[in-house]
Length: 140
Image (cartoon, rainbow, N blue to C red; front, side):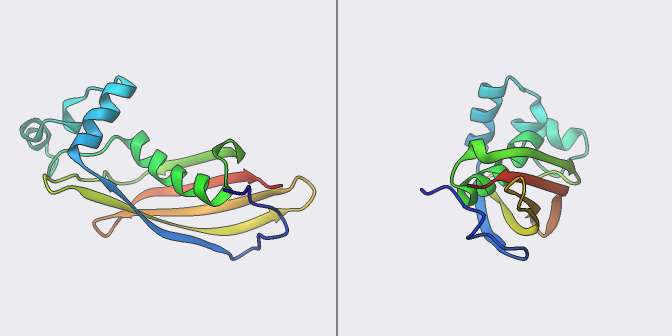
C-alpha cells in the first residue's frame, strides 16, 4: 500500500465508514497479549454482576480498532505521530459478537510540517464509544 501524500489529501476528506468486528475470542487474545485479564472482558456472569450488560471490549482494543482505520488510510502505521481519545462508552460484545464502526474527517492540513489532523468517530450499537478522538498523520 502506498503512503499517503500531502498532494492527495484535502481538508474535509472522509475515511470510512469501516466496520471492525470483535468476537469474544478477540477479547481473550487481546487479554493474553496485553496482560489485562480483568474478568469484565471475558466472564459474562462477572460482567453482569458489576452492572454491565455483557462482557465489554478493552478500551485500548477499541482505540486500536480506530487506529487500524487511520493506519490503512495513511498507508503506514508509523505515519501516525499523535493519537488520543476519551473513552465515552464501552463496546458490548454479546456471544454473537459485535463491531465498532469508525469514520473520520481530515480537519486540518499543515503544509509546512506535511501533517494532517484527522478527527475520528467510533460507534458501537448506536453509541459513540470514543470521544475527542484525533490522529495526526505525517504525509509524504
